[in-house]
Image 1: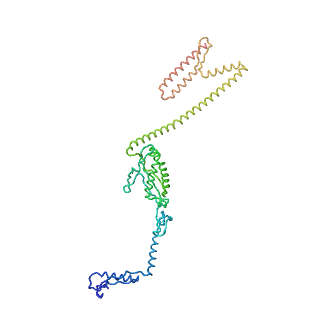
Image 2 (image 1 turned 30 degrees about the horizontal axis):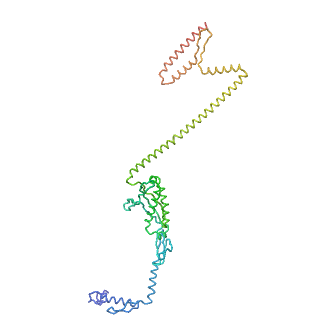
Image 3 (image 1 turned 180 degrees about the vertical axis):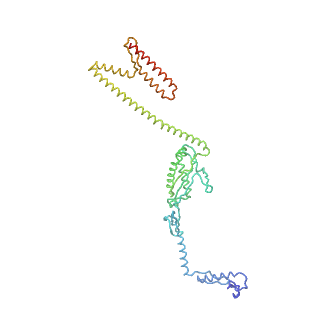
Length: 405
C-alpha cells in the first residue's frame, strides 16, 4: 500500500520514518550498492565512514565478461556492401582483398579496416564553369576556360566530364586528393593540349565532336598513366566561343564566313544545273552532226551509184538515154512550175487559154478567206472572183467564135 496511508508504518520509500522530511542519506545508498557489488565480485563491505576497500572481481566472473567483450569486438567486423559498391579490406593499412555486394566480415579494428567505394555511380565534373544547384545559373571560371589555340587566338571553352570508378584499389592507394579535383586537373591539361593543336575556327565551328573525342582519349591515357582507377565515360563540349571582349567582331567574321559558304553552295548548285544541260546539248548536237554526216554520205554514195548506172546505160544506148534524161528533167521542172496553154496555130497572135493554176490558187485562197470568221474582205474577194470568172468566160467564148469563123 502507499507509504503515506494508514497501515504503512509511516515509512517513506527510502525506508525511513515519516518524521524525516529531508532527502535520503547518500552514504547509506553508496553502502548498499557496495554490498550488492561485493556479493557479486567477492569484495568486502566498507564501514560507515567509507574506509572499506574497492570491490574485487571473482575469477569465475572474468571469463563470461571477457567472452562478452570479445564477442562485441568481433561483431564490429560485420559490414554490408550495397549493390553497385565494392569494399576494399586492408590489414594493418596494406591491401588485402576486394569484396562485392553482400554481408561481409573482417577482423575488427585495429587489425583490419575496410573502405567502401561506389563503382557504378556516374559522377560529373565541370571544367571552365560551375552550375549553381539552387538557381541553375552558370558561372564561368576564366582560369580554367581561357585557352590558347594553334593560330594564337584565345578561346573560352567549357567541358563536362562524366566518369566512374573501375578499380577502387588504385583509387584508394594512388590518389591522395579528391576524385573531382584529379579529374578536373587532368581534363584541363588534356583540353589545353588538344585545343593548342587546332585553330580557333575549327574548335568553334565544325571540330567540336572531334576535339571532344580526342580529349576523352587523352584524358583516359593520363589517368591510366598515374593508375588512378578512374574510367572516363563521356566528354562533352558545352560551349566554345571567343572571349566577350572580341565576341561581336568574331560574330561578324562568322556571319561573313557563312555568307561565303552560302554563295559557294549557290554557285555549286548553278554549276550542277547548267553543266549537265550544256553537256546534253553538246551530245545532242554531236549526234545530229553524226546523223547529218551519215545522211550526206549515204546520199552522195547513192547519187554516185545512180550516175554510174546511168552512165553504163548511156554507153549502151546514147540516144535513148539522152531522150529519157531530157524527159525526166522536163517532168521535174514542170512539176514545180506554173504552166500556161498557148495556141500558136493562128499566126502571130498568141492566145492564152485557161490559166488553170492561177484559178485553182485563187479558188483555194478564196475558200480559205470565206472559212475565216474574222476576215472583213471575204465578200469583196468573192465579188472580185465572180466578176473575173464572168469576164474570162466572155473573153474565151469570143475568142473561140473568132477562131471558128
